[in-house]
Image 1 (cartoon, helix red, strand yellow):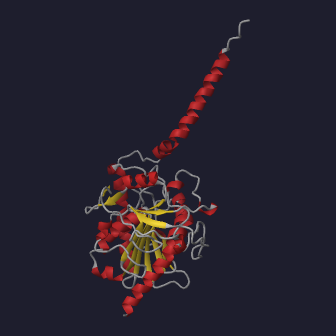
Image 2: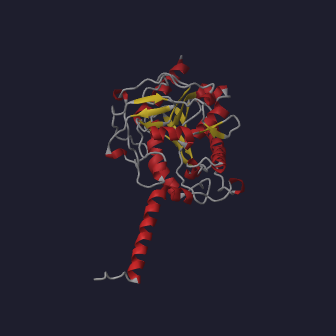
Image 3: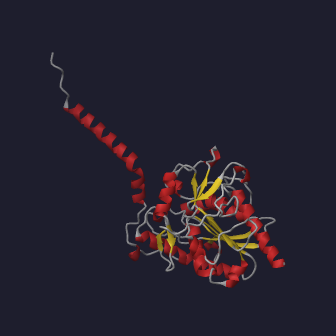
Length: 367
């Protein structure tokens, strides 16, 4: 008996199903590329009209302005935040973007500015930050956008210095903010003997920095040392793929203020748990505490999970064991997973480090 042939409607149905399956599979495979392409401003930076500049004489240009917790020390802290603006319409984020400000307030400030609250009064400028897209490509346009952001940070620094003409200072930044602090140190602090005398420490959190660019400041050797640099870029132990990608794609400032490949330049790595760059394996017993401070009200200290993470500076990166806890999971959104983590594995360690170096600075002035 002859088998019944497929009708035209059935053929159309099968073909439609196949096309939908192929489309879904393609989106799954190339989802990251699709989302990344959506963040591209699609305009050369040379012809780009950036958003209006902030006025650092106004409180609205600051995410924090001399914010002081109860019982804080006598340092003035200049903190530069990481990327919170995704991109799309602009190479550099406008001041006051709602989504960018929400991520800054909810995630970055409590997790990364919070550890310095016990050391003194914290000021954190809003600035026309280079978008997340600029962190995902090595294009020249992206490098120019990141260099453009430095102009705002330098102006904010000048305004902040004018308001704090004396006393101990701490400079700190995370990810893109740490890159900008590194350039600020190289171009402004390193050549100013008076500023160097006032410097408690520089903190470059989760960023790859050319160690030689910090001269004459040195990498910190011990925790009770003042006037030195603490910096690292962290990668989970065993994640060699991520380590290689990070080193291969790292950009650092050259003497002309341009971003160039890290290449063979020595990367700064000071272990935030030990406060030293000696490369020794640091036992998890010395880990003072990780914290998830996301959403925490300013001035409140988070709960810590201590003695959990072993660390070692190796080949220019801070390798660390993985903390397995539901409180330390990444966000599910594609863009947010590529921003500063919604927790700080070394919150209590950074806090203790800043307090100890401030005490060393104060003792030096009293002697």
